[in-house]
Length: 208
Image 1 (cartoon, one colour):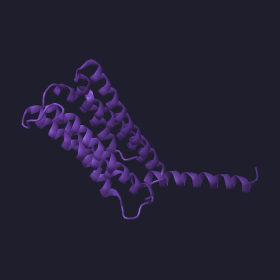
Image 2 (tube, rainbow, N blue to C red; image 1 turned 60 degrees about the vertical axis):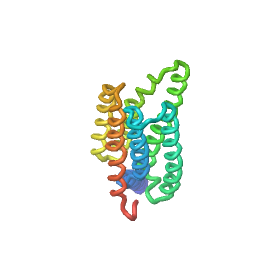
Image 3 (tube, rainbow, N blue to C red; image 1 turned 120 degrees about the vertical axis):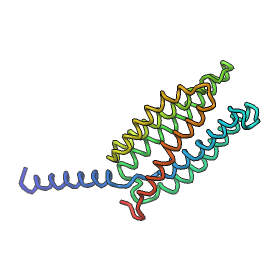
Image 4 (spheres, helix red, strand yellow; image 1 turned 90 degrees about the vertical axis):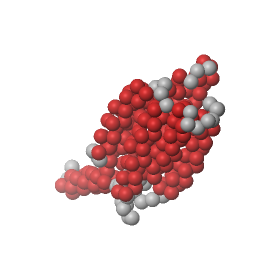
C-alpha cells in the first residue's frame, strides 16, 4: 500500500471511531416513557393494594379492569411518546437505538408473559401464576437497565440494574400479602419513574 492509501485507512478508522464515540455521548431519549410506565402502573399497584386489603370494596373482577385499563392507557402514551422522540436529534445514535431495542424487548416480554400467565390462570383456575409477576417485572427491568448502561456508558444505570435484580427475589417474600402491591409500586417508582425523570432532565435542548 502506498503512503496515501495507508493515511486514507487511518482517516477512515478515525472517522468511524468518532462516530461511535459521538453515538455513546448522545443523551439517552425515552425517559418520558419510563415516567409514564412508573406512574401509570405504580398508581395501579396502589389501587390493587386497596382492593386486596379491603380498603376498596370491589369484587375480584376489578383487577382485570384495573390492569387492562392501565395497559391500554400506557399503550396510547407509548405510541405518542415514540412518535415524539423518534424524530428528535440523537434518536438514531448507536446508544439510543440499542437502548431502545433493549427496552422494546423488555416491553414485549412483559406483554407476552402477561398473556401466558392469563392462560395458565384460566386453565388452572388459580391466580398463583400472577404472584410471580412483580418478581419477573423487576428481573426484566434489570436487563433493560443493563443494556442501557452498557451502551450509554452511564455507570449509575448499572446500579439500577443490580437493584432491580436484588428486588426481584426480595419482593417474592411479600407474596400472599397486600403489601406486595405497595412493594411493587415502590419498585416502579424507584426503577422507572425517578430514573425517567433524571433522563429527561439530562436531555439538552439540542442533542447530538
